[in-house]
Length: 165
Image (cartoon, rainbow, N blue to C red):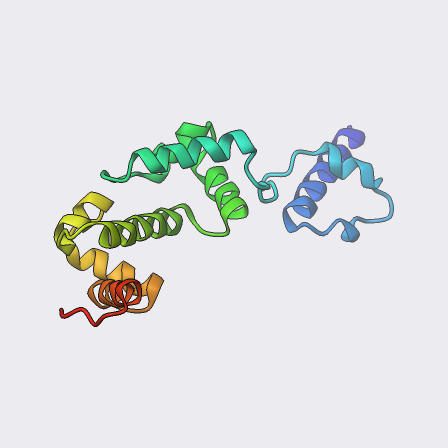
């Protein structure tokens, strides 16, 4: 009976050690390989996404510009849980899924500003923002200036002439 209790205590000790991530604190009487045989309750962060999953999520983001896209939907598209997807996405792209999506929408809005004469409200809707104010806030975070000022500056650079606002 004491053998069963000792094995249970060892497993509990090893589980705590794995959760803390400190394998050096194992006592001398426990073989270090035993810790590896016990399932850790909190696995370490997931590495970067595979190339296939990366392409799948990028395709989903690109086809969903004009509508809201949830983290659950992105995670389901690549077959991961929401938490695992979030960690893998950040490891792959260096940004959270929400920040990446926002950056891509701002970049799409910038391309539309250069290619068309649409007003900012229409561009915001086409790029997937709620309204013009939302676009302006996010644009300023990425480019450091208002969309209108950025558009005028880019047009002046292309034409070499001052563009009136």
